Length: 334
Image 1: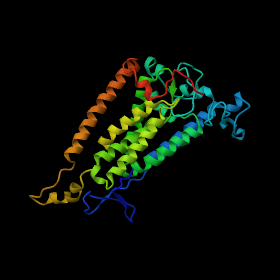
Image 2: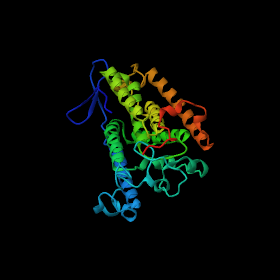
Image 3: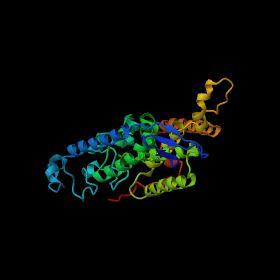
Image 4: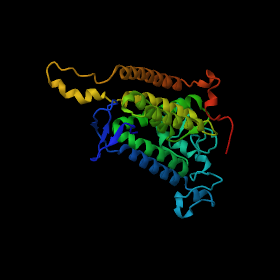
């Protein structure tokens, strides 16, 4: 995200206001390549899943039969234009509730999020692989459009290392929280990482507050976007815990990775060459406090979540109302 206080200069760079109406200073404009590669990778994986599904071998009601093995199941079987119900998922799409121990489920074999596999068979890699699987063209396009729209701008502003880290780690956090509350179903989808980018946008706004001219407007708009998306996550049969976990992870990481130095420090750092000169600190006290607090909470939450997960515990036992935050997998909606 490019803040409201940033302006494109004629040479393609970005200029940021000092927050006091003073002169602007040039900011680095990174070339975005990680987010486009993420989008391409998700598309390639989906094509492979469709190939493995091989609809014509099992049904004569496939859509797009001219695609051969890459054709889709009928709308009755999968309204998202994707593989059969045996490869359906629970996160962010119209789906069936599945038995996570059903070995006939192809997506499970390919790395879908399955609590039983992770806890009892120690297949922790599923916490990451589930982010690259999608159940249908509609689900894939919706996720990838949002990832590209948000991620490319963030990567241009902060670079591929920081944004790539936020994408992967926040998606991992979403998988952990999902497993802690949803243990009788499988999940796939990149929405946890997408919500991580949204969370990072919010923390970037807060920790770089002085870089925004229209602070209130930017904050309200972002909160509305996040609130609407989280509210939609309570509709059946969406796993909103993945959204919440990804958002919290991205929100905390944003304080650590998307921080800007004070403009006064950036403008006056050359004066360090002059004996006796006084230069503003690189970061103000508020920024440092937010970074320390975010780092502490993130490490504590991340480690605690992994420990509780591999102990096989279910957080619904301790939080009787938490199920209201997401669709209940005890009922089915197809």
